[in-house]
Image 1 (cartoon, protein in one colour):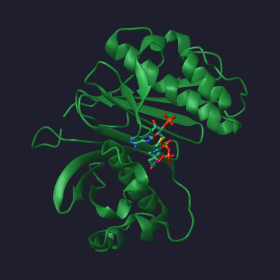
Image 2 (tube, rainbow, N blue to C red; image 1 turned 180 degrees about the vertical axis):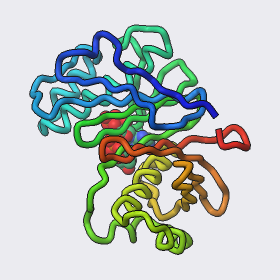
Image 3 (tube, rainbow, N blue to C red; image 1 turned 120 degrees about the vertical axis):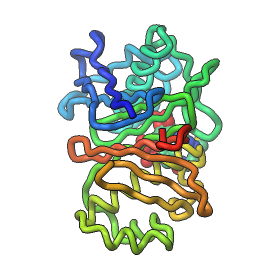
Length: 238
Ligand SMILES: CC(C)(COP(=O)(O)OP(=O)(O)OC[C@H]1O[C@@H](n2cnc3c(N)ncnc32)[C@H](O)[C@@H]1OP(=O)(O)O)[C@@H](O)C(=O)NCCC(=O)NCCS
């Protein structure tokens, strides 16, 4: 299994409101690459340079400043990642929003997934169904874990001695990544899936109706969990 790192710090990303980060924390299959971008919390400037006209219009229509900045950051992360893989300028990466809300790469077998939270946006791409989620590790509303867990997950969840909040947010992150890989999003309840997590290896297996359907990898990043779920190709889970 290869440890992949995408250096997203290409020249055009230095400056403006963005601070690019190369991300080495996740162990992903060889065809899967990931880009995390972080915007400075104090920056009000939106850098629309890499976006298409349509995306710029969509960004300008978002009235909530934080959501607007995260949308732009997500598209920048996706375009940066795919420009490198497709060998075209970022703005020419052919992205389209599908009817279910997912972003697809037209004319390519590459699958893309985007997530944003706090000041971060993450994009992953690979030649297989794939989903990513980023979530801040902080206490959430009561009852979240009851919504997330499958009835068969409770014993393993309770037996694991890691901090409760970290566990809850990790289940949430991995299940949301899985539901994105499946393209249902939260129209399917997270509790319909069952997760087996190996905390030491930072990986997991996701089951639906007792069948293993996806693999997951995760890492902590600046107080956030980043989780990636994907269809495995080999017995080792890659
Ligand atoms: C998909 C979903 C789980 C995203 O969760 P979230 O906490 O809002 O936000 P995240 O930042 O983690 O992810 C957002 C990204 O998920 C992607 N996404 C949206 N719908 C998706 C789907 N059905 N499958 C996979 N990815 C999807 C988008 O790229 C989106 O970012 P963008 O709007 O900037 O392009 C959630 O929005 C959901 O369940 N939606 C239900 C499906 C739906 O209502 N679709 C809208 C039809 S237009």
